[in-house]
Length: 328
Picture 1 (cartoon, helix red, strand yellow):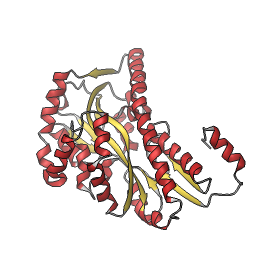
Picture 2 (picture 1 turned 90 degrees about the horizontal axis):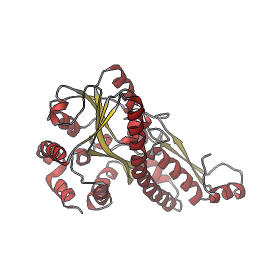
Picture 3 (picture 1 turned 30 degrees about the vertical axis):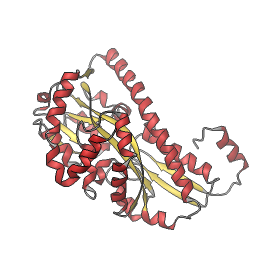
Picture 4 (picture 1 turned 90 degrees about the vertical axis):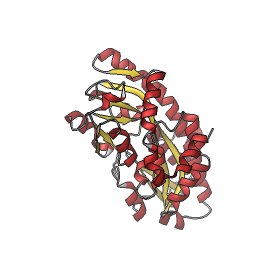
């Protein structure tokens, strides 16, 4: 077990040695070493502590139980109880979720959290819950950056003709097509192989995923574009939650709330540490280069990317986009 606090160790000594009354299966598709993976383990620890051992959360990382794109179906069927899929996995059932894929919509980390924890975030959670899930909270993956094995991506024209892996999202498809790039929808677990084999030239990822999955081994250039935000929605199986004891529900909700704060803090810290590791790797190997956009270059990207917003006024709602832009 991965208990790390003195309090947890004491509990293990004083609690009777019998199995938990209730077991919650949690599945995710990334490494346990990522903020999301650590957040999942923290959630399991806090559930055990808050329920005095009555509830055990078993964490299945790295697509061990269900792969990317399979989690929502498994959750709907009750085969698994908690998952935290990326936002793009919800867009077919809740088109408004495409809001989070819009490039350069969010100014910074504080702006993102103000949106997620405010009116817009609640509107989206309500729509997901109405589809037969229990939407609990939002976790960070961080801002996405562009990488390639073809050439450095500095100007929008550098994307022309390149093949990029994307998640299943009409917005992300439009984002790259407006720059004359080609897109391929691939599960996250297959990205490394696709980059290695040249099936795709590049991808967009937060730094934590880029580093833990060793994409730097199969990419020559990384541009710190921070062009898009990637997040996760923590959801519970509605059928499981409906039957779950009412006296234990507040403890689960509290554990998720604490895990959210913990995971978000980790993302911020991890981004700084990971960037330093990548810079050191670039320095020592010589075959990998990190690029930073100037203010003028980023403004140019922003103007070009904002041109796709009107294409999604119908699906997302112009009012929702305006609410995000007006949030402080």
